[in-house]
Image 1: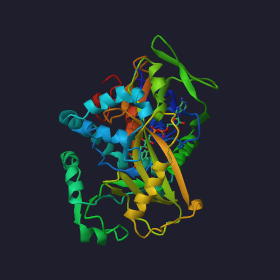
Image 2: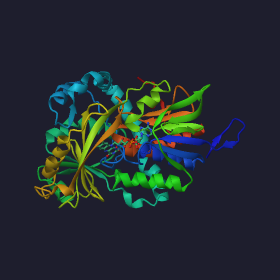
Image 3: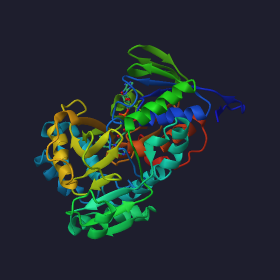
Length: 426
Ligand SMILES: Cc1cc2nc3c(=O)[nH]c(=O)nc-3n(C[C@H](O)[C@H](O)[C@H](O)COP(=O)(O)OP(=O)(O)OC[C@H]3O[C@@H](n4cnc5c(N)ncnc54)[C@H](O)[C@@H]3O)c2cc1C
């Protein structure tokens, strides 16, 4: 449905979508379904940002914010253990302090409950919202609905997550629990060290995140959209109306724009008068090509805070959080640690792998302190819509975000309450 103007005539708008990651391609796909002309603009190739190397989990159950009650007690450990599941680089502490303070403040019980509800509104419909796009792209082989396993090495580590599981239950997430023997039958590849497992059956995963984004971007082009290689530098706005999107390769005329530039969205929002506390939580992956064994479904090690995902290109261990600046050099030790942890999780893996079968990656999660994205109109012009800041859940939140972007541009009532996602909430 294209946007209805005041006289009731449906208008076809030219919309520039900045960023061809999972969020941008989902927005572009939904905008086309609404009848608009789309130009996807990316400084690089589609899907080569954070959407490239994530764990590929489409977990509707991911409603637990990163900042939870009592989080402040963990900060010293994050500072002193550079190889722990979450670490902060000392050098960047002065830069990160304002974000960290907001992050800690976001962890009160009341705020956490509200954030979980808001997250669920984006995540629960994910697979249903993704299905038509995947069908249209002929990419059904890339999206699987097999569930997600959370594995615990001790009853104590399970007990530590009691609040997290209560939050999931309060938001309508169901699961099945398994004791040590049942867990071994369910997933024989897993080490006997794990004593408890939980399977959330509603969750899905992507067999190759890069290929999915590429297929969705190709489909946008097949339906008449354009793909432009350019770095967006700002906007021409007069009297509150967007005139053009400025790039390092000339101006692009557009009636509307969507900012879906992931971790790089902050300066673009600032150009429109919105100073959002967007930082990056960097994460790593390590992949083994032709692994000796793989879990059947994505399996999270609750203590190590990483996920082992069976993918079409091999076995991917992904996760961990490193707080440093956008441009800090990667610390590849953090990726290598995933291999040691992965071998402990799956004892059937070889003790040594030739380097040619191993690959590592670092990516930048676009993260807001309250674990919620920014979705809504910009302050400087209602013609520009934000869709960034999805942190740990950008792949799973993208389909619903895409639909909301189209609703905002059409001026139709949004499918979910957008108040928690306002740019000016801090
Ligand atoms: C280790 C790890 C594991 C993860 N696991 C999961 C998971 O299992 N499930 C899940 O849902 N999420 C997961 N995530 C998070 C997820 O990957 C991100 O939230 C998601 O990819 C963000 O998508 P995006 O489209 O917003 O950003 P990106 O994929 O980063 O895309 C942004 C695009 O914008 C472009 N761009 C930036 N600036 C400009 C500019 N000025 N002009 C033009 N183009 C620009 C970039 O080139 C890039 O292509 C994980 C992340 C990491 C790091």
